[in-house]
Image 1 (cartoon, rainbow, N blue to C red):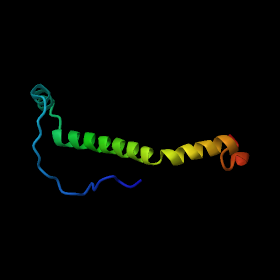
Image 2 (cartoon, helix red, strand yellow; image 1 turned 60 degrees about the vertical axis):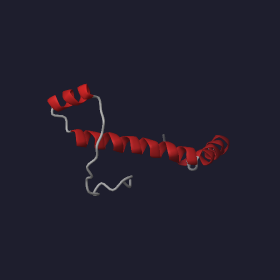
Image 3 (spheres, rainbow, N blue to C red; image 1 turned 135 degrees about the horizontal axis):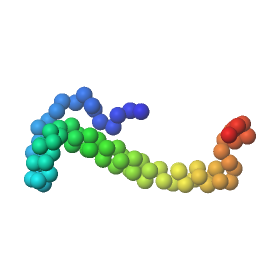
Image 4 (cartoon, helix red, strand yellow; image 1 turned 135 degrees about the vertical axis):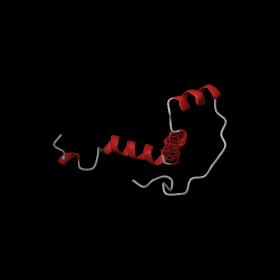
Length: 81
């Protein structure tokens, strides 16, 4: 599967505002803030892209499901499970 962003792109400094108590507690636990945020953003991007794809293809998905309901899946006669 192809990545949804360039994992080799250079890092870029940015300013964020987060809950001060959350920040204090994460720093005390030595949480890598950059890595944690990057992972969370990548997961959110993947979720958003998947939702966008499903929305853009909902008519084709509906048509396929209706076809399968009426005619069955291609190769059903060869399945052994």
